[in-house]
Image 1: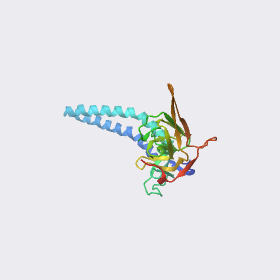
Image 2: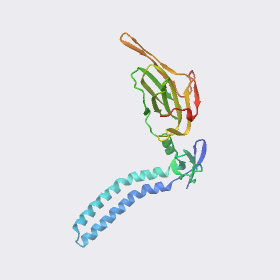
Image 3: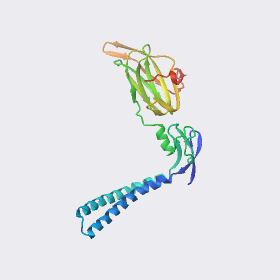
Image 4: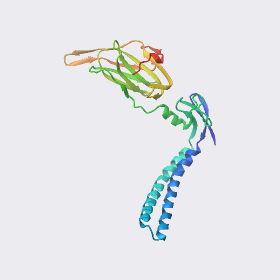
Length: 263
């Protein structure tokens, strides 16, 4: 196999073509075509002896369908085979979220069997498509007007949790993809603490990121006010960023995993 070096997680890893993927892509239409051929032979056999007309009709119909499927799947199969031929893969452990050289078959960290993935495939796994703004929990009945926009300008995904001061009730726990933002609306007047976790490879069962996770919270409470003025209402619209900004004044502190709120 031809070697290629890919750089991931600041490591230079040996990548190779996975010829099994190439053969698998090509073999599908060939196998279907062979099955169609066998059906046509069965039709010829039954027709030659002029027996089992029911089987003759059955095998001729199946053979025609299989042959049509093989023809229709041939060109997509060739496309995927060519794509697989030019794709180099490395070994990857989903449990540990670690990449290794192609020839490594067992994860040295957890002992699990490794899978072969391309660099693009690993990126897709690490950034599982959980929709931006997916809400995990929302406890408090909201009838306020306040708005809080949370900007995640980091290269990591985030879980943001807004908690009411005093009661420690979770207003909302929300997932924010990297380089994205989300606005929590209808926030009641009062003070709230904003906690957030950053990381990759979110595990819904463990309710935490499996890789590169950190836990932080803003040191000062976020205050929301609203007031009526004749026929209008003035209310707080606040924006915060989870990444450092040049003129930012809000300070955050790092937390341990035990100090981070859960639901």
